[in-house]
Image (cartoon, rainbow over the protein chains, first blue to last red):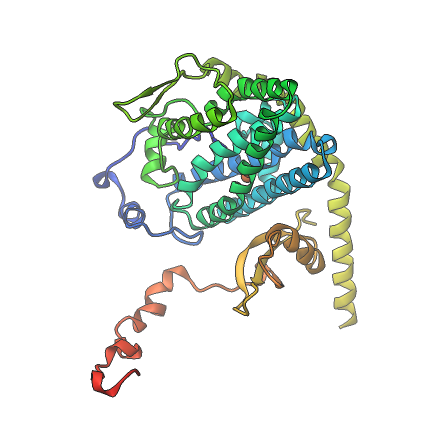
Length: 330
Length: 94
Ligand SMILES: [Fe+2]
Ligand SMILES: [Fe+2]
């Protein structure tokens, strides 16, 4: 997902009898569905895990602007350009809401950005794939934002107040993202033979990377179990992936496109589709920095950060000067 | 000198004359930029017609540890609510 394989520091999920009194009271609040606010007592592990998770989520929103930003100047019409610009601007907003949510836990935005640039924090694997044609912009909105919605809708109910509120804002804006993507796919799929070919090619390349967004199966993961006990993770990776596939198959059929999976078939018994797992060795390669665009993405981020530094400093110096002049005049 | 832009809390009043409501926070070098950034970050879809910003450092919050002392006294004063009083139906709507 936008936050993949977040570690919790737990080596097992402790039951109530193994907790301190404070921890028990905290867990009881979560079990009652109460929201935890930044100034409330919380276990150190909860705080640290949330910083990792929200930070990674924020980084994904920001880095995720790059593959789409790549097509703003080449959008086929002025309307498509305005739409894509608005979509990418939303993603910047999502990143900012989330950095602010993380900051309530006692980390600064600059620290998080520096950790990302030092390779000590990650962002979603999906943004390390290139957007080669205009159809990819359609497929990203349809599949990538579609997968993000799957994960973000339940997270609106997460136990940490600021994270939950950020998710509510984000979810309000996501539906436009997926629909504009599907709209591009409809145009392409009903267009010329060449456009259809581009649409199918985009689906072929982005299908498995989209399935990877949910992360490998975590049904035996201590970290996921702990995160679920804390309600900072609501569903297992497999549950969300299954929901995503079940939802997407008919959408692909409507477009007349073929999902690149020979094993895809309806399973009456489970009431969902059977499908092939993505190549997890590819996922781990991408996560460890060896995807098609990892280096390019980080270079673009670091360049923007470094080349913007004099602007940030100048504006701060100007504000300090104005403030000093005001104080002197009083 | 600290280089990171300070944090501001953003409050927005929607279309319908309600109170300004806290919507989130953002970083900006000064109040003027905070308003401009708030417009971009929090009002891209006509969410409001007025923005307030205030440096986060200027906010004084109640102590979460004093929750009971602050809010408990109102719990047993149910006579502050209209539903405490039984008014006969004959009296009509009140
Ligand atoms: Fe987003
Ligand atoms: Fe999005």
